[in-house]
Image 1 (cartoon, rainbow, N blue to C red):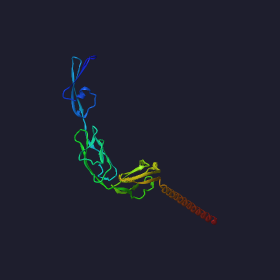
Image 2: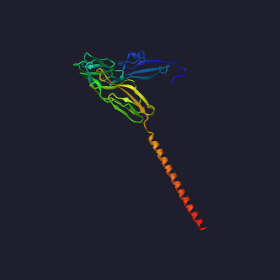
Image 3: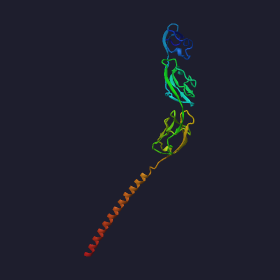
Image 4: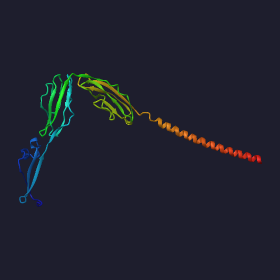
Amino acid sequence: AFPVGSALTFTFSTNNSNPTILQATPSAAAVLADVGNHDYDVTISDGANPVVVFVRIVVSGTAPVITSAAAPTQAADGGTLSHQFTATGNPTPTFAVTTGTLPGWATLTPAGLLSGTPALGQDISVTVSAQNGIAPDDTEVLVITVIAGVAPVITSGAAPTTATVGTLYSHQFTATGTPAPTFSVTAGGPLPAWLTLTPAGLLSGTPATGDIGTVGPFTVTADNGVAPAATESVTITVSAGGGGGGGGGGGGDDSGCSTGSSSTYWLALLGLLSVVAIAMRVRGSKA
């Protein structure tokens, strides 16, 4: 321990080879080249009692992992292709084609956006890598066939226009088209919390009492990148339903039971009075 009031001197030295940036400015941000362990000896002294403290600074990174859904395997001639690659990792990964070459109509940005207007005879067959300098890179094999496109046509019947509190509402949209269309709400949204639409076209949910009222109109669109997209307008009225009739019937039964009991009471009383009257007449005739 140092005596109270002692003047302390700090010296700083490295005990192995370390990044210049850390030696000159310890508060500076580390860079990719700094990844690893960096050891230092810190000497604290009042001129007579030096104390050496060992310090290790660890600069770490995380290898990339692609987290986006798989890219489509087909694209329509003259349509629109757009797919966003995403990945985790530290530092933030960037994307590049590392095997093969993209056709002239397609581009991939370092941020991972693959886009373009497909052309027949110009398919994609490449490997996309997510890289951040920390091994190993993560990769995805990308094979997209360009086909003659057919615009979507919705083939399912109209969606139901009514829903009941506490009862599942469900409607399956279907559509033809090449490539296979996907579904989304493109106008009039967002949908209320109780109602969802999947990309495969399932519109479903169970409304609660607080949802009574009208949903919509909103537009459901079937799209596959080939114009024109197909649309359907949907309006749903949510009602409470007819649950009160059963309770009324129960009340009727209770009323019937009460009437039956009252009738039995009066019949018994009349019978008793008749017996008393007959007994009094018999006694009167004997007198």
